[in-house]
Image 1 (cartoon, rainbow, N blue to C red):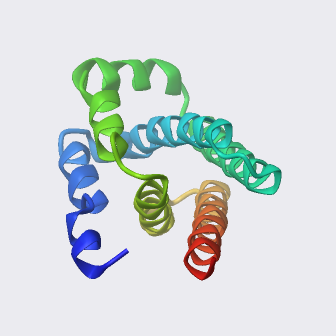
Image 2 (image 1 turned 135 degrees about the horizontal axis):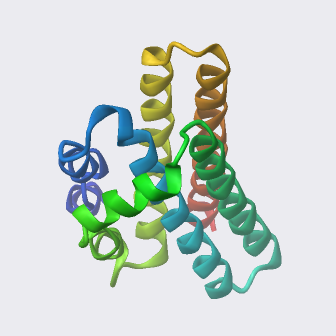
Length: 165
């Protein structure tokens, strides 16, 4: 991918930042947890699209990590499901926006976008952990950051392998 191609990719931080601004700060982790579940579904779809079994398995591991992140975060907030429903009701275009970031792009570009999203996710969970006063919640959020980084590394390895092939 050339530098011109990279310039055309969406800025995940900007897109997510605009959505986050419309959500109360104490509910933002639950919004991100929704995005993690959307990412898990995306990973599962990618796993069905690729032919190589090792790549399929890695994408499914990424999906499992996204689900684990969402579950960890949701466990930190009483009433998480109802709060998330309210957030989704207030942001009815969230799923369409998520889909539009990836739609019509070659798989390598989708992986590049997602890897950037994983890196952003790791930074976001760390930022949430810094403002968290409960030690167990802070530890859980930091664990989420590590899970995000594992998925970023996996995607970046796939991209490097493709570039070297």
